[in-house]
Amino acid sequence: MFLLPPSTDVLRESFNSPPRPKTRMSSGAVALCKHFERGGASSEHGRHHPFWSLPAGSNENKTNTAGQILESMLAQAVWKNVMLLHHGVAVYEIRNALGFGMRWTLDLEEKPSTVQFGEEKADPTEVQDDLDKDWIINRTTLRGFLEPIAGMDHELPRNETG
Image (cartoon, rainbow, N blue to C red):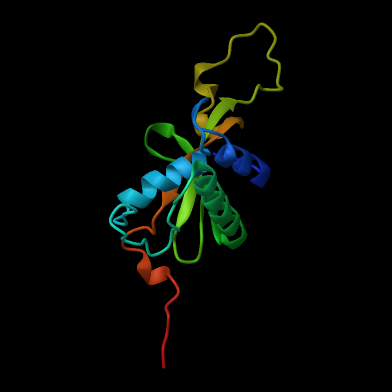
């Protein structure tokens, strides 16, 4: 499957929009709050995360913190990839040099074929596999924040002292 990634404007829009109509934080702020607590850090117990900033204060402050993280991640992304997860869920992922990143879900729709076959029925042996079809992105939704991939730390830059 070949699919161009969403633009940074689309990524920002989905990150900054509320996840539900009456939510007063951005999708990014909500995801940061959830991820911060799951990642072993704790805003309640004062445990810091080794990378992500603590989302604290008002909903507006949390949204601003998340927005700063997004801009930093977009500027520092060294790895960008559109891929399929289990059950054919299409996602776009960006990661920095340390392996931390963000992921968006891509809602896809088959691009209409420009070839007209007339009234003939297609030969079943010529039916295109989904991976060979052309797709368009209908909607991009922030899925969440990412930790480095376990077992791939050998590929990360080392802090050499000496």
